[in-house]
Length: 116
Image (cartoon, rainbow, N blue to C red):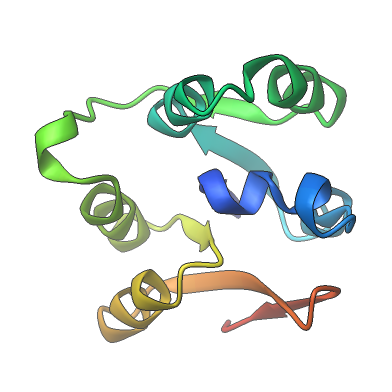
């Protein structure tokens, strides 16, 4: 199973002090889209997150994302193609559920919740 983490999910270890990536590894391979890495650069989190991505062996998924289509729309499309989307964004989670996609999120700042 391929798990795709978005920007807010990769920041959980730094904001909630919960190492979610190790827990995700039992479900499959963990990826982060290239456009999320770019967003992290814009937020000034590049050095911290890049070292974390290397440490946790998270693979960067190269996409054909264009800024004008919206990251959430792109993640929604990827969920239709079999990726499990890992996000804290409740609106995105609702949309993914509506199209039959799979999601993972952090509940109560420490529990991994999944809908599959």
